[in-house]
Length: 186
Image (cartoon, rainbow, N blue to C red; front, top):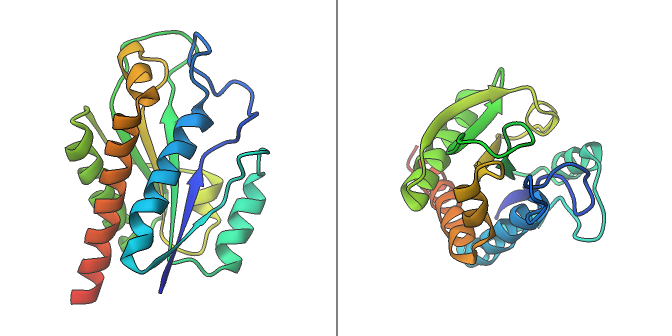
């Protein structure tokens, strides 16, 4: 059985991770998508594990240690993006891998990214490299998905909608399932 860590980025009390008007805390979106992912993928003979906690901000080192200790097969970190702290027009979906990601990580990132774009219909901002701890220090393929900008009024409204949260979860899960299917054929 494959093990997947779903990491709802940040935590319920992380300061600053909010829309400019305070109507949306990033963790609320991240956790809602993680729950939808787990529900959808548990029926696919996958063990889905959360690295976050709804009651406290779990430090990055705890998230990484859990993933490595569990010998997870994939680590997926879910986020809502921001550009500055004020409203602006920056929008779209970005997906990150570590700077020196292996080809298997780039493959899963590509599939997830394509499927999230397809599912949400949002602007494609591309697959990028980032030096984030959850990507750098995990021992398995790790991907960080930014599902829209909290600093864009249109996307902030979408991030709050259950239907959009489900579209993001559907895109991520479809990408994961395509990746798994592709590895079976090799």
